[in-house]
Image (cartoon, rainbow, N blue to C red; front, side, top):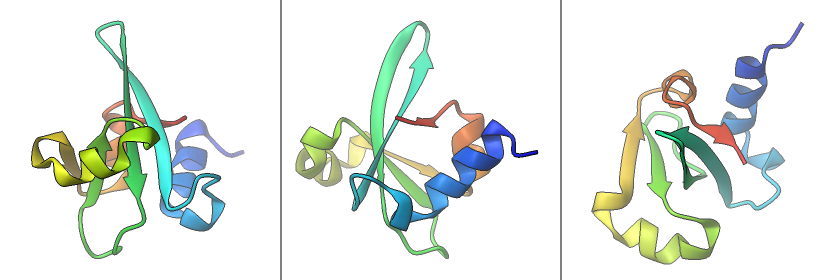
Length: 85
């Protein structure tokens, strides 16, 4: 049986499945507020970079260092509350 965690981790890791490739919109609820972000395809040997913002703000979010979050693994991303949007 596949868990939600397994499904999300596989989806995070497989850009070929992303409907909005080259970005994957993600979201999380933080203190009753919805936070939006996105992933981009990355090198598997590097930390995962999450950009705070929507897919309509890709250029701005990628250029703004303050809007980046780094995760060592997709499990860490999941544990921090991020889910595929």
